[in-house]
Image (cartoon, rainbow, N blue to C red):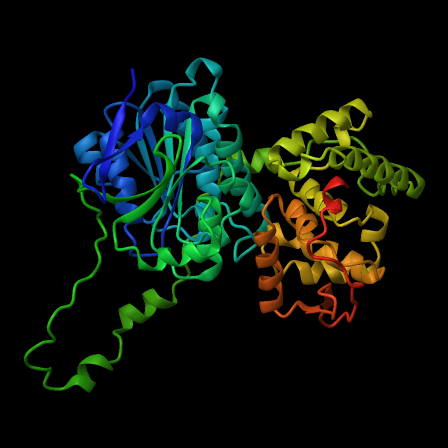
Length: 498
């Protein structure tokens, strides 16, 4: 039986339909600037599908807690629970098929990432017997799957990004259909966004976000300007669950309303205070001052976390230092890992596969080579892959000059860092500048236009300078390092065979 969800109406007045069963198999990405109607769209979708499928919403602002009264969602205030408690809550929610709203309001960014990762981990790790169909909506997904490191610790970012990657890359077989919404496509991790097959693109103004949205919808660059003109509540839809061709639609009304509505303009008071200075600048009372100076109470100790973090007891003397690793063994291990990576990248389709798929292949090959117990984790593999695509071996990466290159590359979004290092490798050896197709392949796309946009973005960040010689060949110079590539034909096609 096909379940059709009515999102609203098309420009012609026909009903805009979403195939719920198809959505469960293909996932959805929603993009729109603040005020575009993105949260309204999510609310409409959740309300219309609530009778048919279990739902879970990762809600950083507490906007969706009002679903509880009308549709029976269980609101979980993350601030009141430990990470272990939230993981267990995620498992139990799936076991008993209860729709939930994880309210992260009131937590700082670090705590939001950790608690969301724990809850998503519970949804993901539940036993096979409880893999019921479930919509998992993540609002403001760029917070939980950031393209680059931000204000939170690297550990929290890895936990959250890993949970989001599991949801979007491996969740389908477990019955989890990820629906991620973001204000900034450029700030969302590429491997998370790439797993979506359905798209609803709303109003956006930044060139890099418009270009990426147009690329996802298969639109030409000149058509990307249309995203600036979309009205609130209007979206461009594409995907097997929505439409085979880009379709403009307007989202219909909702039954519930967000708890945090947009503030409305109000007239100023007719009469002012008699003595504004005395009222506004009055000294605080002694009691208020004491409360202000009082240090916040420390959080209650999480004994389970402390036990898990504790090192196992040992009978060895504590003053015996650990033996340093053998340099020869380290060099041999690096060489074997480089060989495995080279074998993976030898596949012409490797550049277009998701990072999660490549990592699974990498782990299998490591086990075959007897390196299973010492295989790098996903973040380390990502860095190794970036270097390998740029033609930089592990031995070269340890040199000071390449560490400087990596530091400059870290200023870019994660999916562009490998391109910068590839250009640096060519420039250092004075090799011809890579073609558009070679850059596109390293970026994970077949679009030469997208490759040119990547170079333009790097030039805007004052990291490179792009020039053309008299024959139309491209030269890229790295700012500060003063390395320059030899002239290279941007339209060459032979790079795709490498």
